[in-house]
Length: 220
Ligand SMILES: Nc1ncnc2c1ncn2[C@@H]1O[C@H](COP(=O)(O)OP(=O)(O)OP(=O)(O)O)[C@@H](O)[C@H]1O
Ligand SMILES: [Mg+2]
Image 1 (cartoon, rainbow, N blue to C red):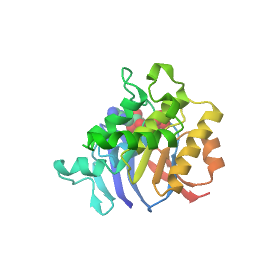
Image 2 (cartoon, rainbow, N blue to C red):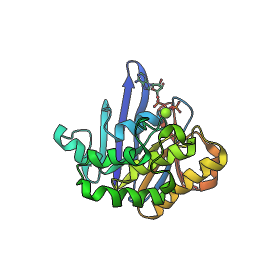
Image 3 (cartoon, rainbow, N blue to C red):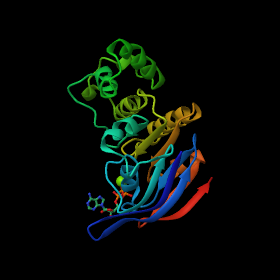
């Protein structure tokens, strides 16, 4: 579903990615690891087409992401769920409203919102918190709101950047199990993380970057 070919990206004279190539098949669960500055976030941002590479190709479901026409970008983005570390949760909206934002973006008819949101709240075990505001939630709960918002549009792939970054071990494990559950239901999952303990425990595919190059690509 994803073919990365000879991808390179620099910021000025900082080389963030240098000639990176790999494939990810439908339904895979992949950890993207590497030290701070290795290029993980850059790679995720390229996949999301938030930034463009200097050279190389990204083929997602047969579509060339790099050379996409501007009007085709939203259609592709709809198939990608994103969970970033800073959550990007709106503080003045409830949990339910935060999730609905994602449905508004894809223009889903309002009549269908309630059922879709209820289903996802149930999945992330936040049904009881639907009408709470973000300030009333714990870090793990906020992370689950971010996941719910990513999942509610029913994407083919979930991209997460350090989703367990600020969480304690037990909470981090729960979040990762949720990604595992979603993966077992058929979604492709890519998680960028420093958390070597989680990576070792989950025994999934690992792609490790070092100074913008792949130094490890294996199935644990
Ligand atoms: N917007 C930017 N402008 C300039 N340099 C950048 C920018 N974003 C990233 N970089 C540089 O590119 C390199 C790769 O950064 P990136 O954020 O991809 O690393 P990372 O693996 O996600 O690190 P971390 O684990 O700390 O999140 C780093 O040297 C970083 O300083
Ligand atoms: Mg990063």
